Image (cartoon, rainbow, N blue to C red; front, top):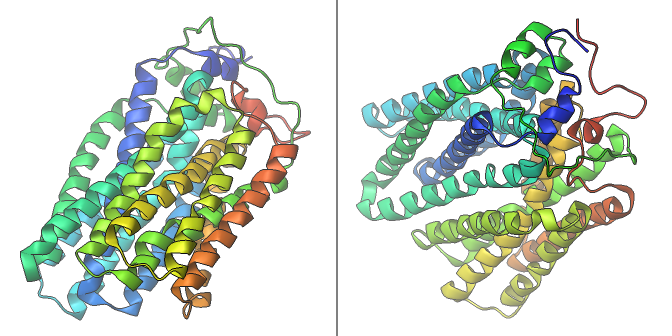
Length: 447
């Protein structure tokens, strides 16, 4: 024990009642995810104005940089709260430049270059914030609310993306000015969220687990006072005995991530192109994100009642099955907007189940001192696979893409099946025991 810090600090965090600090952290991460969804939508609203290959390259590369660099800095030196200063600065500056660029410059190469630079800056910020936000939620949320928090907070990305798609659809009817008005509307919403995030993040505490992992005892002692450590008498926290090495965890999570990334956009951004043009394309985007957001409201209703190993297996099985009606739609040569909207909603509804398997497990299975970077690395592998996939599938037909989606989900299902036998349930389990590496302590000694 270190003077000034409670004994069994990790246990106190796990068994705590919900308090003001938890509300601030949940709100902070939820706003960050919402901004992520909004800014993601921005890329699709402006692309038709440029239709340039370099646009696609930047949109693919910027998230990769954010997912690797910023989480690494967060783990090594800045922590969770201080990293938010960097991420907010990046997408705050990027958003401001985007507005000025679209308002002051005429369409052309110069406008596109400035837009892409600003958009890349914004995407590095919001994408880099995702692993940090998941790490923060895993490190400080009481186990009673941990899984729900790791679902409900990320679900704001789906809500933000749905709001962005709705804005794109509504502004389409403004004619030639639609892309500019739409982009400014989306950026305006993002800036509003940014202002709220700044206020909330100034009040929230730093991750106490990260501080102790870095040996910052004095700072940890100060932050402990900001968190409610009143124990919930009804909470019984258990240890995990069946510990797997980091390599095994990483491989399983990567199989899930690849399946998730390579199927997420198939209905809304690939197959839809074969059947629709704007504004119907934007409606497909809206229904896709609406289905994803709906899943984020349904899963928390039962996530504490089901073994998370079984949940992971079920989610990939349902996502795989959701491609069967898509295959039938394509094979039968159907062309009906209402049916396609319904298929898109259903497909994304179940694919999002698999995303929540990831948002629960990814931050819980890696040690605190490198948690954010490992989460970012899992995502980075899938992003790279997605980029490679765009070249491999360049000449695919509609039926090829539908089959491809099913096969990718089966890859995730194979990983979930392995985890069902070798992995473990995370419900009411100690965060420190879940993330511990066999034969290694969870924390470095405090000085």
